[in-house]
Image (tube, rainbow, N blue to C red; front, side, top):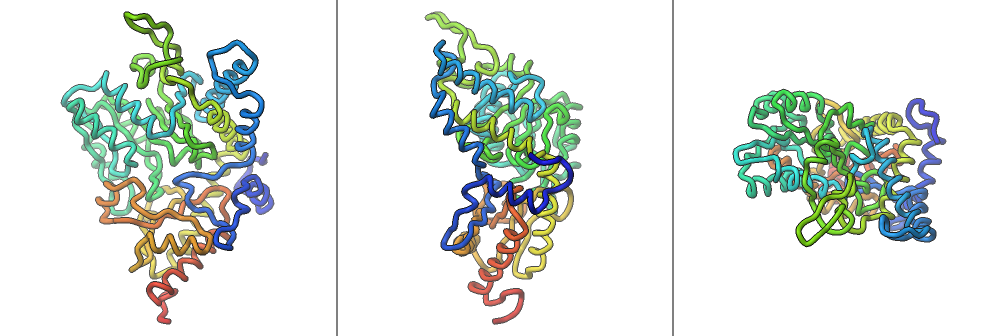
Amino acid sequence: MMDGRGAFTAEELERIRADFPILKREVNGEKLVYLDNAASTQKPSSVIDSMADFFRTSNANIHRAIHTLGYESTVAYENAHKAVAKFIGAKSWREVIFVRNATEALNLVAYSWASKFLSPGDEVVVTMMEHHSNIVPWLMAKERLGIDLKFIRVKDSGVLDMEHAEESITDRTRLVGAIHASNVLGAVNDLHKLRDLARARGAKFLVDGAQSIPHMPVDVGSLGCDFFAASGHKMLGPTGIGILYAKREILEETPPFLTGGDMISMVTVRGATWNDLPFKFEAGTPAVCEAVGLGEAVKYLSALGMERIYSYEKELGAYFLEELKKLPFVDIYGHKEGECLAVFSFNVKGVHPHDAASMLDKFGIAVRSGNHCAQPLMESLGMDNTLRASFYFYNTREDADRLIHALKEVDSLFNKTASGGKK
């Protein structure tokens, strides 16, 4: 689709935006500016069409019939595994488990793997930057298994305290888990350093890649992770499907998470044996159509080129940050050091973020307000609720400018101090 050189041109951006029908929509009489991409991304026509075509032409259950539709559905489902495996650099498509979302992927690790391999007194170390989905499952494992759960601190600047990471990971540590990129601060963590610290202590390494995989090249082999979790709906795919990558030898040793149909090899009244990977962990009728959509999504991203996407978003993010810094009535969190995605948490002084988000919606601008499922991080940095604007490759400088203008209007309405001047 694109030539693979540099960031996108204006002409390319116009063609890209034309691929997303929802971007033509108006909200409250204004052209939509969608800046809630860290929560969920919009879908290109190719993804929408692939799912509609599946239902129109090939819809059937997989692995259960020898008729034509059953065969076509099975092939489509397994091809989606192969497309995702190629996209993330997995050695085999059998190392890619389809789940509902990254949350389920992380729960699978914290329940099935942890129940077999963790004992009372063992340590799991995660960062204070984690989304709740990589905290709550380990809190439950702590209660269930008697393990110790430790948190790596975040500096006031919004990056991980790597000295504290080194202190926290000990000979008792069995797993280190880290978010690849913060859904609140945009900070991209040094996974290679964390991996090396984990390996030095013989610990497994888990990565929550829900925020990184839509925006930057991801290669699980290069990362050297044992587990990698992501959600389809954050990377152009549909809701209801996500992935857990794990090394094959780990999956072979780990007991199933859910049990029932299709995840078995044989069942008798005396017991059961398990199906081959990845189906051992995909009990029941899976989200076949959603898998088709996810497969098409990674094809779309691959055609654009993840390096180009990352390059463009860094340029766009830098532009927005400079404009945001010019607003004296805005408090910005993070983005003070290190590598960051184009994800920005901030507040208009004196204005509750829910009120600000509601007014921004009047201008057709969609941003998130709240704690962003990261309450421990918020508390550690003395934050509460914030506004969050998160950009994607189909956003433009015009989108950034419209948000800046609207924030001035918010300040003018609530504080009467637009651009720092009294009205």
